[in-house]
Each structure stands twice: as structure tokens, then as C-alpha cells.
Length: 182
Image (cartoon, rainbow, N blue to C red; front, side, top):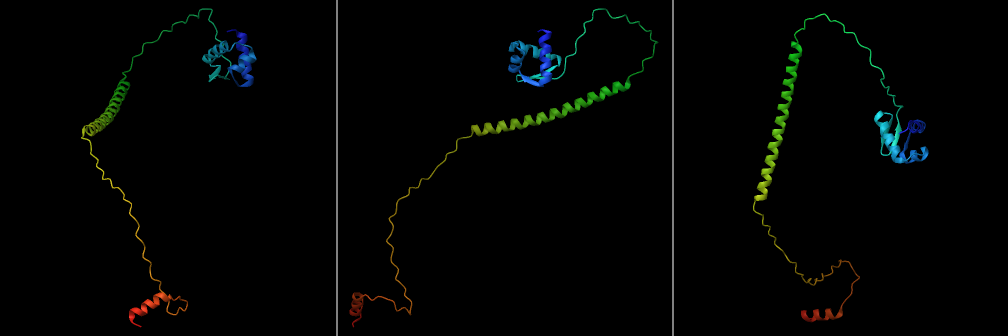
């Protein structure tokens, strides 16, 4: 990774904002795989954000200074001896925290035991259903037999009393008269 390529990449992304690796490789005339390696290195340094093949400029990386000389010696300052105060409060707080943690764990343990009991119950019910004898289902099949329709009896026509529009069947009238003896 050359510094020149890195600087060109950062300047291009600063102007454009973000670009995909294919476009960057074509614009900067760099092999795409080498470009991805450079981008990943810059991402580790916090200069770029790289997601799904798209590089986004964040800021220029901070140059790491190499330390060439030894640090100056630090003079030791003599401390006056102070009495250490008893740390009862921190010890008591630690005990309180531990008790609270124990209570939380006990509550969680109770919830888990309840869930375990429920799952055991459902497992037992399912086993009982599996071991139960099979149900026999009986069906009564009714066949439909076609029924011949009966001849409809014609209803006598009812005529109104004051109806003068009627037809006389002479043959029927003669038969009726003979029956009655006319």
C-alpha cells in the first residue's frame, strides 16, 4: 500500500462522499482487490466506512508518531505516609451488590423452574395422547335413491260468481244430464 494511492483514494472519497469499489478501481486505476485491502486497512484506522462494496469517507486518519527517543525520567516524589481509612462503606456496598445479584439469580431460577414444570406438564400430556388408544370413527353412509316424481293433480278452476266468460263443454254436459235423469 503506497501512501500516494491512499491519499488519492481519500481525496476522491472526500469529494464524492461515497463510491463502490468498481468505480473507485476504474477512476483511480488500481486493481480492485488491492483497493479493497487498502479500504479495509483505512476502515480499521477509522478513516472510512466499508459496507456491501461501498466505501464512505469519514475523516483523514491520524498519523501515528513513532517514538525515537526514550522518555525523560520522572522524578519520584516522596509521599508522606497517610493512614488508610477503613473501607467499610465499600465493603458494605460490595455485600449489598452481591446480595442483590443473589436475589436476582434466585428470581430467575424460580422463573426457569416454573417454565421447566410447564414444559414437563405439556410433555406428559403429549405422551398420554400418543399412548391413548386410537379413536374409532364410524360413519353411516346414506345412499340417495332417485324418486320418480308423482303426477300432479290438476286443481279445479274456481270461477267467480259473476263471471259470464266461460266455455261450455257440451259432451260433458250431456253426460251429466243423463246421470241425473233429465
